[in-house]
Length: 152
Image 1 (spheres, rainbow, N blue to C red):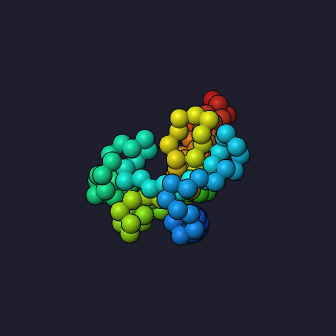
Image 2 (cartoon, helix red, strand yellow; image 1 turned 45 degrees about the horizontal axis):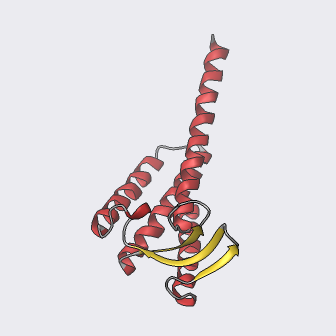
């Protein structure tokens, strides 16, 4: 779990470094015209600008989540759940590092065919973690039901 966290933080911070240092703020590079762009953007809030300017609140929430995951992970033996927690913790840590170091989060992925906020790799890792956790929960539930049926 922790190696996934460290790898996701490293990749996230590398991409953000490249965006901050090799693109002008607001610069957009089309990847797939009228669909997907690389855009240098900064966010002082969360998605869709919620909690804008609430840096300490967002840092506090992220740190509480990270500590909670660390404590919870001590009880987890399921490998898929541990992988999910690693992605989730890496995503949370990637964004909290931005907030602590720069006071804002560097975003870059811009899906323009829908009204969706510009996001970053840490956000992708958070979503991957949630999806894997849902899959893990589903599989665990299915296994438990199967075991109950066998015992009946």
